[in-house]
Length: 318
Image (cartoon, rainbow, N blue to C red; front, side):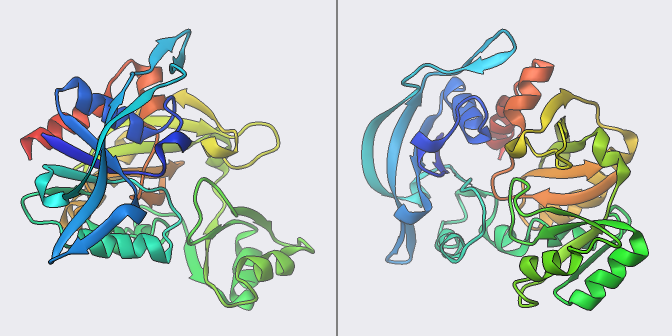
């Protein structure tokens, strides 16, 4: 197969952490031709989606003393061609959030990829699934949650709950997440700053004490959970995200979490969201990550698995 990955500039990726690199390595191992491009290099010509594609060869990372180690020159570009994406068997859209206007325009371009080429994840699903808001439809699975830009409503909710977590709707990697507490003299100011003086809604969720034991990332492939990693806050930080220093640990997927996955599966499949990472704290779904879900490198390292191979093997059957 020919597979193209739409990613951020490859020189900015971390081969020992980024799931996109793990997927490219797996595709190479299984004998497929891999191309890379960037969202800014996509076009529509004569009703077809095109991209400036670069054929890439990776030197795979090696597990040394429990850590992924890459060579200094870990990728090589073989050739560059302007090609219609219809010539590819699959396209992985894995540009990191935030979901900006240029990102949305890229998904519109991907609408012009022919039906014979599988796009992971589907552009319509990417537009539909804000990573915070998408979870709200699964009311039995989520903690108490409101979305609002109304300072009075937010303050009254925090006073009622006692403790809460504020999340920007367009945030990533834990950016802008705040711990709110009733009676905090800074509460109004934090809400004003986060909502841009009441112009932009934010998500408020009741604080889950289980967060101190970890924020679990579960990777789903076509609605089925294939692996998980626990991200545990360190030091005085209440967020467990790896990007803010959260420690990762091996974990199991509980019966409650499998039940949550079963609730999500039909909706994810309907929306073409094939490769997804969900976040679960204390048995509650908190986010559904669809743009470029990460965690595969950490799961593989801790469990001696190769989830990238599972993803590409699934792709081959499609």
